Amino acid sequence: PKKANISRVNLTYEPPTDLTKEEKLFWKKYTNTSGGTTLYVEEYKRPTFSVSLNDFKENVTYGQEVNLTGKILSYAKTPISNAKIEATINLSEYATQQNTYYHSETLPNIETTTDATGNFSVKFHLKSIPKDSLIHQPIQDYKIKINVKDASGEAQTTYTELKVNHNDLILNFPEYSKEFSLDSDLKLYLKSTNANGSFKPVSGILKIIHNI
Image (cartoon, rainbow, N blue to C red; front, top):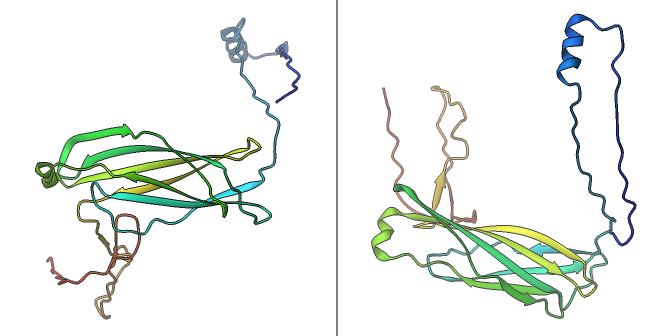
């Protein structure tokens, strides 16, 4: 804050005189001890704009260029133009077929500004994978932090995440934990999405195996 009062408060406590033997031992243990904590007080400034990121629904693969888009609006629904955008991207890479493999790195920061309608885009290339490493089916997890600062100096931060899988396909049964009766028809619902949760159409053969 521009102006602040800085002060120190000391607290002391004298135990009562009518203590039991166990209580006296307790207080003896902590005699002449001290401790402290720090409190930070900042001037509260009500935010004047909001930052929204568009859902990333594309099917992506290693080495591809991606475009993350968003919009900045004031709470009066007017666009914020020429706001400074800085994107920090942290990559975590691991392999489902190789438990000992893990790699992390921070990509170079990306800077841009919003246009007259408050829109912005952040373009970057996903990391390529050598052909001889594809057998390990590596998974890339990009954690993206977007810092925004408008002309008045007000700053806000938002986050998003982008995943890249080897075949960009995730299959699961939403009701897998549901109990089924032997006397009723069995209905299974299969959900197929890409690595970022968007619907992905698939076709294939479903086999049901009876384990006795």
